[in-house]
Length: 50
Image (cartoon, rainbow, N blue to C red; front, side):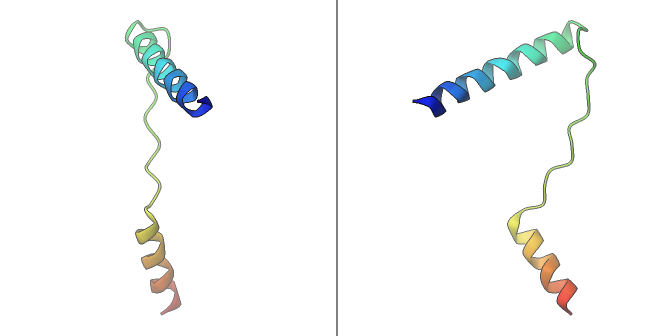
């Protein structure tokens, strides 16, 4: 039940921040680059071993 509440809260916060940014209350910040997938990390490890 706690996880469900946390998901709902997170969704509400994201919606609030989006609205606040559109209203000019918060500056729009660029999203951080996505983390590499496990497969990409594994392939990088293999490359480093060669």
